[in-house]
Image (cartoon, rainbow, N blue to C red; front, side, top):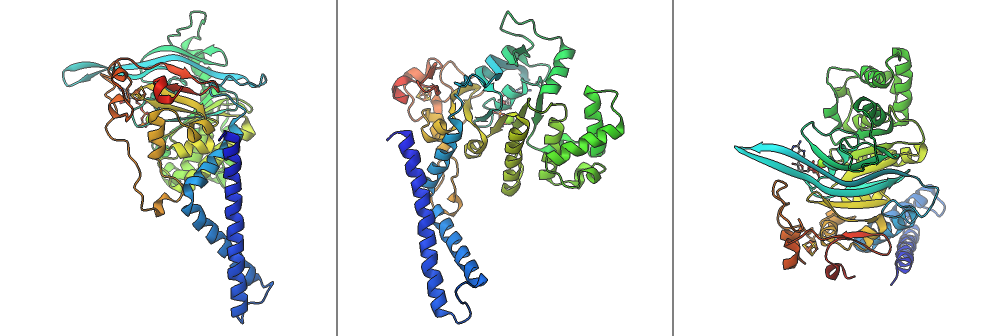
Length: 435
Ligand SMILES: Nc1ncnc2c1ncn2[C@@H]1O[C@H](COP(=O)(O)OP(=O)(O)OP(=O)(O)O)[C@@H](O)[C@H]1O
Ligand code: SF4
Ligand SMILES: [Mg+2]
């Protein structure tokens, strides 16, 4: 069955659930009308009973048939992501490439006990991002997601050893460009450039703020970095506009508040406003490194909705990092799966979720709680074993010790990234992924 057919069947199935719950609720409503002396047809109470019953039955059916419903959600996502190719090489000539990372390697010399070690955090990562695109990066803890993305705005610690190329709007940002044609920018200019083009938000917004500084002065200092002549009044007006854009109520009054006077969700909104402070409308990149992990589910979906809105209204490109592949699928056009400091699979969200090819992506998906799984007796699959030690990753596929499909050859060399006809990239043996 081809993708279009599957998508159509998924849509028909959800439509069938809606009709089925409406019909069942109709029968229950009629039954109540016949039996009750208090409720007459066309009563508001009657309509409410009908709607609540229909809604409840629909939710129960969704939970009962959750594997098919999840499939439909992904099918719907696939329609949005068709416009972009997984490599960022858009078939649409009008879409510009914003970021191009090539063969990025990042290591850290460290001392463990009396031993000098070299941590190979990122081992040759390449990807690109189009203007206005949302790229999701998933992978277990230690797979190199944060180190890869922190290199883009230049936020790695001083001892990081970097090689490869990071080109943003064709300007080389890596300190040690692999591309001999690139002149690169002087360090000070590079910092200014990054501040105007790239913003970053992190997992625990509360920890990013000085508890003794009110928000007004945090914004004032941020604005002064790029414009030393800005007055306090100008800074206040700009901060208020940014905070309102980020959805913080009573923005003007709240500039006098300190971090402990905000909730986690409000602090994340402030973090987003600060990340956007230097970025002009209509461009820019926001890197969101697990921005919702420390928040509860309701606030999490509000922050995702805010990011989607900013993408639409500002033309922002976003790199969204998370352990949760379902959450990433909700916002991303393309997904990159990382493990052991390398890219294991990359493709459009629909391709990755609907037809994952790599054994690690498949394991991540089966370990992800789907809709309604909290009400199920089924146990979630977990990935046995532990991630590799980045100080001695070995020569072969980093997933080999945990991979159910591993062959002896897997431990010899890291497999090549195989590019499928549709652009999906998979780093595994051809005989395992079936090409
Ligand atoms: N400053 C550093 N010095 C030494 N090792 C580091 C440093 N920063 C990161 N690492 C190591 O690099 C590897 C990749 O780290 P990274 O933070 O990118 O992982 P991650 O995928 O973001 O994980 P998580 O999901 O837990 O945030 C890890 O093994 C980490 O311990
Ligand atoms: S290369 Fe081998 S070990 Fe690695 S994911 Fe593929 S089958 Fe598994
Ligand atoms: Mg991280």
